[in-house]
Length: 354
Ligand SMILES: Nc1ncnc2c1ncn2[C@@H]1O[C@H](COP(=O)(O)OP(=O)(O)O)[C@@H](O)[C@H]1O
Ligand SMILES: [Mg+2]
Image 1 (cartoon, rainbow, N blue to C red):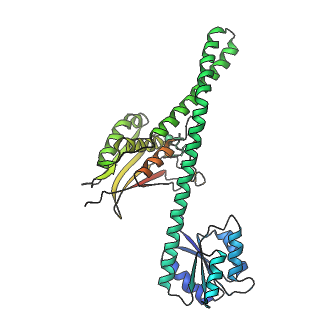
Image 2: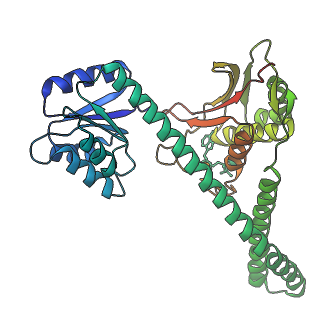
Image 3: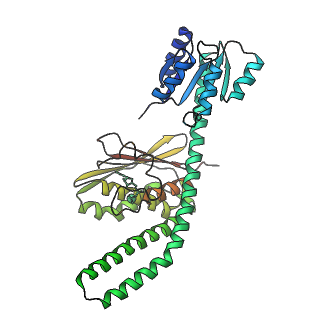
């Protein structure tokens, strides 16, 4: 997985060394720049997730650099922490006005820098999640609206086409009409999936055991996997704590994911399903396959409604799964290290006693 990247900008090399080594030991990848202009260039090439920016620097100063970053759509969402030795109130106000997210006075303790970095990154992650959820919800409404609009015309087209088909003898016209009927069926299927998507909207959470849901899902899909020579391996944790789940919708999510894994394996392969405690009061369910994997550039789209790489896919399987896991107050992520298949990981909260 890509490490989180932090750009450190300061004209004082000692500061840069101090900060970067602390950040590296925190597990971040770092790059550095020694003046404002260089910082702007580095932002383009290094593509940082966060920037630590000194104020007093040659060429252009930190304020100007941040001002420019914040006026560009591409870079305005990168959080910036400004560091300055002056620490005057006006500077603080100026720093915040310009749009820096945080302001720290130098000399600042490395522990504090590290804590601020962590909290800003956390905030940014939450924000991105919110945007993602809103986007999916908006897309969901749109899709629903379109499905509603095309349902009736589709019925008319399909019905008429079938009637016309009975009346014509011409072979070529027969082929054409068959094609129309086939395509209408494809669209009807899509509308059906959208209805299913709408139904999947609601999960009613009750106390339940996640392992039971996994076992039932596997039971249902086993024969499809076996037909393709795919082994399903289960490694489930013992004494799973009770969780608030909707067995029916959760099963639907798991089945969608398993179906994707089966689709992704060409012939002969393996699917490994694991449940384990994941800390912070969560249980993690992972579904790992030895299939084709997902290209890095496609990963950001796979949860979108109608995103599919398959000829016959509706592109709603993961959209449905995402919504269901959201309703369970959980989290779903997908990784696909090159040449290693795909790993879907779902984290669900454990029921807190008392
Ligand atoms: N386990 C997997 N292996 C490879 N590709 C996957 C996997 N899961 C999902 N994908 C990709 O994500 C896309 C979207 O999945 P999904 O929403 O279920 O729609 P569909 O299965 O109808 O295409 C798939 O078309 C495929 O490209
Ligand atoms: Mg699918």
